[in-house]
Length: 297
Image (tube, rainbow, N blue to C red; front, side, top):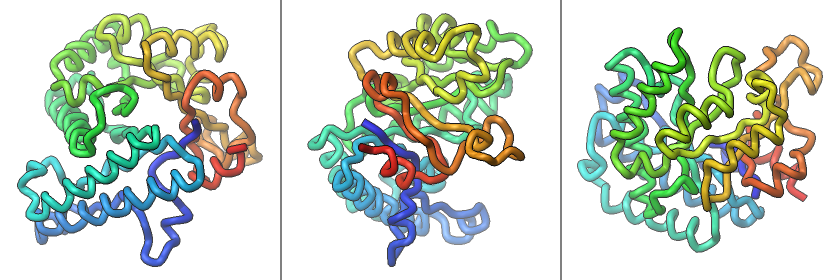
């Protein structure tokens, strides 16, 4: 199956707009507090259902949900929301739709989520973030499995990769089941950072979490492995769960020669047939669902 991330452009232009990433600034939180957070959360879950139904109607079974599904969740417990019962009911409907139709829903916490940071404060906030994502998946009623992954990067090496990997593994081992059972880790898009082979050897083999193979990122951190070789290494870490992979094409390949090498193109030309045959592929492009529909057949 093919999927896309976060925003559905078609539904974003709907009247009223359908989107599940409503958030608020700190000033708004300080002024309006949990009441406003509750209102936005309810709207986000309502529209998540609409997006999932649209996806189903268009033969799309993989979707990455926004990490602002529950705004400012760090400041309250879900059950403290004044409309919690309504939100829980909406979440249950979303989860039922997903499971009844063999769909997959995943999350990708923000770039600042660094579980291996040398900063205690950063680690605490990062752990809190992945725990919240786990709570949302629990609220949806989805199994604690990497099939419904919470995808993270290590994202740095802090001058000592071995020590960084060790810190990451220790943090992962102490995560609650709602987060640990769903955590997956992705290769990076810089030569100095984390390759698929390094993640397999230093993380997956140690704490038994899957490695997400990012096709475009692999071009920056191949470590002499071909795309197929690196994918095969990552695939083995998923066990009985069909792996999710990420696919994008560089903007430069599509004529934007001023773009950074890492920047994604608006659309993709095609996904390698072997990658589609052996994994569920998340299309990462600015075109979102439009890109997917172009290559779906």
